[in-house]
Length: 214
Image (cartoon, rainbow, N blue to C red; front, side, top):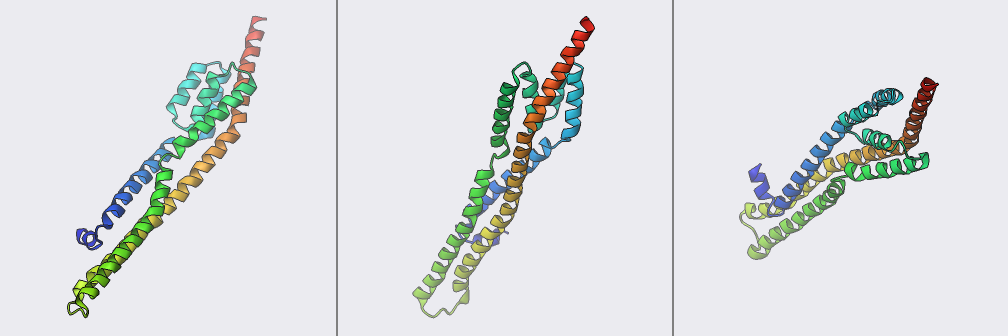
């Protein structure tokens, strides 16, 4: 492997550096998306039952135990349950929008690496070709093919390395973008459901309290 890198010339080092950064981003995003994934219907049911019983602190604790954009919206909605419905809806929409940077963290850098890696490979191709032609220009007819082969191998190795990094990164990038878009779309559609849940449970609790007083 070291010999392969050395044969790729100096351009191989930034290619490897960018590939390491891309691997870190991909692993971190995979772990993050796995950590925030949960059964939203089950969480919704648990929180709803707690709210119907008037156990708001319990509902907030359930949200704290389940780390996800959806549980964050639930918590914010519960904390602002005394606000008018229109205000609640605006607060939840703003909260959903604030989740976007968390979900998209590192993706812009990953996209940049995808664009740079083939260009770095192309740069290595150019420098390797220049070295090969430099040998021909210096010696004319080359008696030792290895002198020419080093420049050609540098050109080919950097091209391959740039593509090997860029292709899987593109696959992961598209997966992350689609996943984030689905999550954000789901959050936007859940705002009305959350407002309805919070107000229905609050009104139901108030009616039960009024009945008990009578």
